[in-house]
Length: 448
Image 1 (cartoon, rainbow, N blue to C red):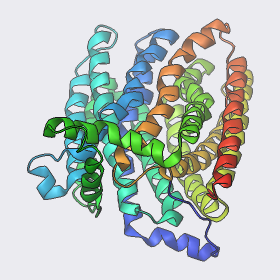
Image 2 (cartoon, rainbow, N blue to C red):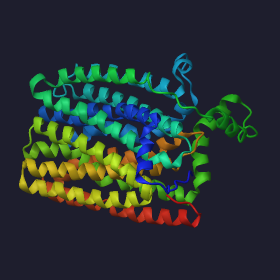
Image 3 (cartoon, rainbow, N blue to C red):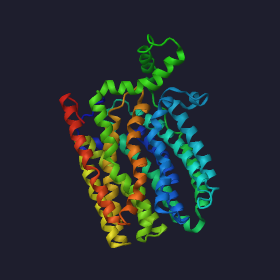
Image 4 (cartoon, rainbow, N blue to C red):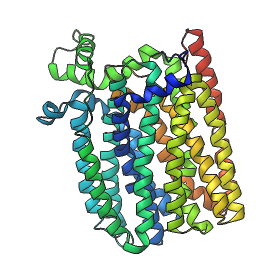
């Protein structure tokens, strides 16, 4: 595990970290990472709501994003396979990113030609295709971020912050445009516009720098571990590609820490995931319009998230990732209670504003620490594969388990206040696991 040391430096030196152009490359690619969630999550929820689908149907439709929870299965291919011609021109990471961006453009054009009310199956299949390509693209982008920062542990929070700020920019600004103009132009036209915007983002991939890495040398050394057990080159390649990333992760971190880490990742953002999956549905049922959702949830929420993400990175750099996770977890629980309050008062724009501000503060602060935490447990040789494994565990909670959010609201008789109260309690077991993990790491002389 890469040790993240809290640097003994002033605030000015901490801020100067952001002069590194590599962090802005991470921001740009982060925009591409967040963009597909507009297509398959927030905008799609609005479209399905306007098509008069039920709460449960909208919630279950979100299960297409469960593919994010299994992208670790093919993540090793993005660490090992070099795309013909493109790799020579762009490098291994950028060639994968660009190819997957263009696939998402094609699938988005396809989904713009469907009608969910009449052909939900085709809409779902295209959304699943977008999710699969986007989940694969995330593997390449996460690998890029880890590779380009390398072993500079003091820059992990800054790199995480720029990735998160980019993610929310790619998610919120297009989401704002989608909801702002949905009533005027219709959702089919909105999706055509979203496809065009993604082409612009894809062009940005040409301007970022491919990270230098000794990944090939390290993978070759890893292959030597298996050469005595298998003589056939194809079997050797499969062992190094599929087995070694996960075996090396367990060897380096230990079985006990590895298991506890996976349990923590699974549960830490579960309550926030239930909230996120049902937030658009909640806003509409409380009485907010598409335009209000665009202004508060997307535009104002984006600005707050980017600001608090950068603030969170400064605090995590100065005081450590562990404290950031604890503070972020407790704040996430508190912010869910604001939604419970909003459910009681109805469509109050002033309360919605402060609810959005607090929710985006807690989300931004905790996710910077969370991404830094995961990055610290990855190795150099298989950075994309190992980060994908850890992120997939979290995505399982965020996508698969949170798909039952609509059914839970129905089971509670439509009581949104009780729903948000329950989601606020979901983070407490994760904080207990975090404390135990940090205790084990300190016994080894490691610190986050």
